[in-house]
Image 1 (spheres, rainbow, N blue to C red):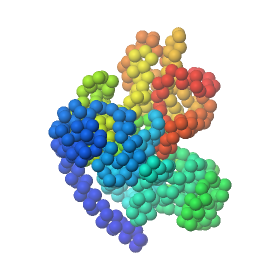
Image 2: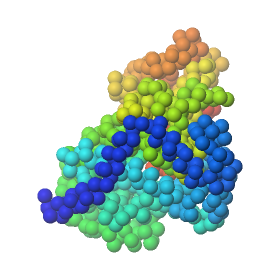
Image 3: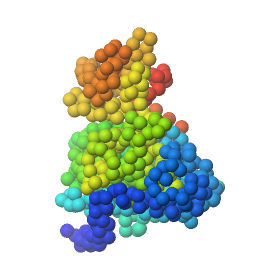
Image 4: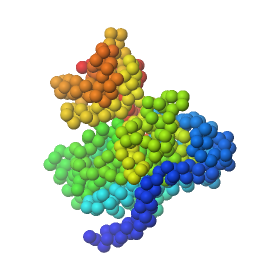
Length: 563
């Protein structure tokens, strides 16, 4: 071990000591989630009782969880939006006791217009604490790979897309937190946060590669694994330009990069003619250049979402990155972190009972006028619920539409995994098909029928004779007709196993078998970009929908054929 590496490891251990102590206390707290959660809720309400929202919702008179529920409905963003609009104009006390709002974090725009979430000191404290505990667990589990205090490849978003009337920046949370990191920690990130301001997608990926290829990267981190797939594809497609820039210490002049950002990046870019020659020889011999050629798999870890609709992208990672350990980032969004995965290889995470107060509504009751509402201590393993967080920064009984399932317990605190956005469902004939059913069926079938699917969506197709579901696949993924038919039959049967209502409608003839609807190669990338443009969302957080419930969807697509 070099002296520099030795010193970095020692510093890392010193920095992590209070975090390790904090983690031990959290593990103790998980033995009594009811007490921890009740105390947290009452603390939040006391702190916010003099805000306009607190006064309107009688926070000062609340003495119990029952009082809280009686005075505050489960509601979507629109319920709190008028108060957030007042905060945007500078009236902070409309919603928050905090003196300062550092940022409005913009949501991903996956499903609707972007929402603005106030980032206060309370927000940042909870955010950092959750990440720190997640990190300690991840590093402990990968001691043998020596990833600690080595560079991280992460593409952050723009921390300031615009400002409110009161001058408060609005932007991407990952970009903001990267910007305000301490210098030592900031230096561990291979890609500077300023790259988040590069709007051209190709340029952003190329710059991320140019900054990373000179570093001994140990972690590839992205909320969505599709980001890592694209990172790898751009590496291969642009290898000649990239290796030339690496050799000469330059940055391509034909990329759409703002001049000020280009100037700052150019001062930091190193050159390495020896490494460029080594990688060039690999590329010439194999005809390609993948991350495994640049960063040996035995010294890397992938940190990304693994639940919900991520399956198609996760299945593509091994061909580019090999098979390093994959660690789920947990259920987190611009609205806050909700779980902390304690183990690799699973999307399940321990509920972050220190940061937010959580309630849960059983999946089948979410549309009921008086649904059953449960606390974290009342959940049952194997059951699915809608998660309803209350935060210390202005979100109360917030219906985020996230459907989760309890997979076990840590102490008495539930371990939950994200299943999907609950509004993604389809119900032509009473089958009540959800995105979770679709992704689970797909994950099961691709293990038996390895069709090379890069992206897909299932959508209902109404037919006066017999309606059915169309599996929309790109032409490049359906080259073998016989393999596609085998896959299709297996997938249709598996949907019935995942959803007995679907099976019943199939058996009764009310639904026809799933058909493949072939669309031009590249359609999904264009469709996703258009959707993001419409909502103004973040590419790094965007989740491609695997179930689209719109009966008119097929009419909006260019269809080459059906199978």
